[in-house]
Image 1 (cartoon, rainbow, N blue to C red):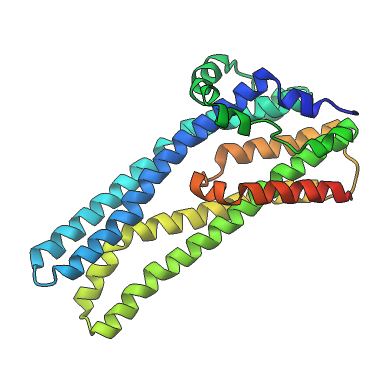
Image 2: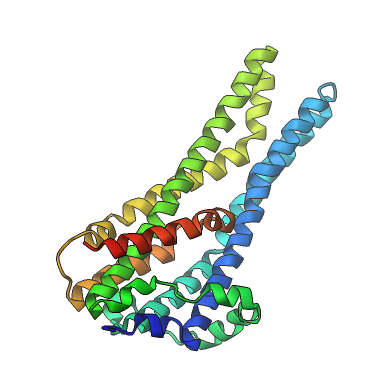
Length: 287
């Protein structure tokens, strides 16, 4: 074995770090799920109710008012998970730095905080669940254990990038499809039902929260993928990297984690096993 990545990533302290960062990301994800319910599910349900109650003018007006209220709630919820996301990113950075045996560079990563209290508190729930705890082992593929240290770190950073970028591209496509449906379905329905301009406007008001949710996601994902371009160039370079170069890549990964849009857990879990298997096979094929 030419490095200690596999051993270190499965140590008790690093499993606790992974459990804590997952819990913080999950808390943020729960907020985003509630946001999606307010932004997409409730407005669509109200739109259906509006169709059923076509003769009740007051029902249409009330539905539109509720939909606008949902829009305001979704804006508030969007900012509620930011602190959790930054904490999760900082804890994951602690994990990577320890697993890679990298020096902590204050100029690149900022002053190092003591996050032990947050880690101890947030990790308790997941560590009590044996199934959850088991899923945290071998965070990076064990195929790196035979590589020299710098090459192993570069492989882990590439695995991290491929997993994150691939997930964001898929989620962006999902949101583009959703946005297209939110825009086109009311228009198609209005053409078939010969609705007035006023009735069509009512339908679009009903869809405002869903429009805002999809557009915000697409905008955020585009920003994430643009921010990740320097990481992509670095991890796909065939040049063997020095520790200083690896530290610069890690800085970009850390900054992206702190700013990136949270992908919903249900979407993440759908692709998890397939993507992990792909990264293992890619590493085994070598350069």
